[in-house]
Length: 191
Length: 222
Image (tube, rainbow over the protein chains, first blue to last red):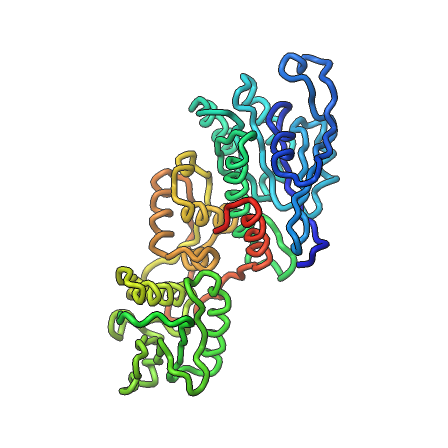
């Protein structure tokens, strides 16, 4: 493993799910943020929204860099996934648990990124300060189950670094243990 | 199992094992090394071993074993005293054995390391996670590791143990809980238990190293 290698992690979610906040918390460079002022009905929820992707980096010293990408969950932005898919290690799906449309947003994200979520190590994080309603947790679990997707669902406040660390702990547990043993050496295949 | 002093490196010698079995043992030690609580290696010629593995199919245990703890292994371990391991050596038994030795030498309860090998009639199952239950967020991280390992690749308890370093009895507890919740499916594997052990899974050290590095930076080092 050389210092020039880079690996990618992807945050996906609806507007307001917390992608930008996560990347800002973890990146050790000034993150690239493609936020613009909202001009549609989204303006009622938040002032700015991401229109391309967020980008940050975490230096791993002699083991390279971890590139952090944030992509919108809406299907119309799905094409951008092809830009980041090479060397992608895992996905964190963010859900704005405070939104009344949280399940609709998750449904769209799961459908738009179905193959990536199925194939890659993945964690679903309900971004909320405090305990979300149990109906939301059950709804998220049902959406995953209906699609045959297996991923842990956890509650985290994206503004709190220790909660992001917990997300990463779980995700890297899956990265570490998710390689198919039948895969030829050097060619990791995620399932 | 005899409690032994706690050497810096646990040295293992073999008695009556074929060269290829010793070579396989050396490879297994390499594979499970990162899961062991202390370094374990094969003793070089002339070095006093801490553990002596004896092939009971061809040799009785030698009379003078010094301070080494003797562990028998056999193609048919049920025909020998309790604690006899399978021959060829299986990764999960070796992992449990060596973890147990270190635990015993540190005063921990006697481990289940050299527990009797599974019955030849016992079915071997591969498990695959169907859903990651919401209750799991309150479970111990070792169970998360087990679940991570079978998230999409079906694996036996032995394979999970080699991949994660989690003891087989802990894996079985986790699987029992997942079965209660209907969160796991299983398929039967045809393994003749007296034949050669299945090839242990390849533990990809690249991802382990990467995880360790990210953990050091963010603070979740395991």
